[in-house]
Image (cartoon, rainbow, N blue to C red):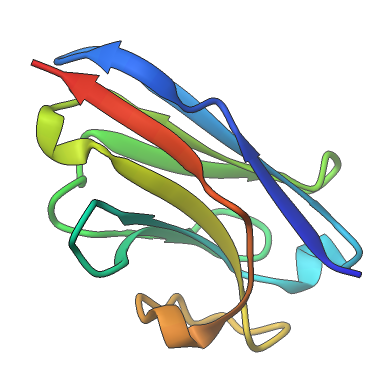
Length: 127
């Protein structure tokens, strides 16, 4: 059974930083490109960042480029999202996800391209 468990969310003031983690189990982690998505109240789930199976190549939404950094540690079966210069517009539930296609080198931004999802962690940025 595949499980993705996010952690690290919380309340932070604007311009602050936060680091999210996502621990995976039940799958061969290094076979999968991984991504982060977020969903704010009343809005659709949106892509945040993605990373290749062994790191190296990453892909970011324009809204977070230069502020967020995605990384992974395959030895720990974990991906991370380092968030800095946070603003209230970053307030959302953040989800990690595993790509639908194993061994792909393509980084995708569509939620439909991801098969496994975590339960989400709330990030709230106060002004």
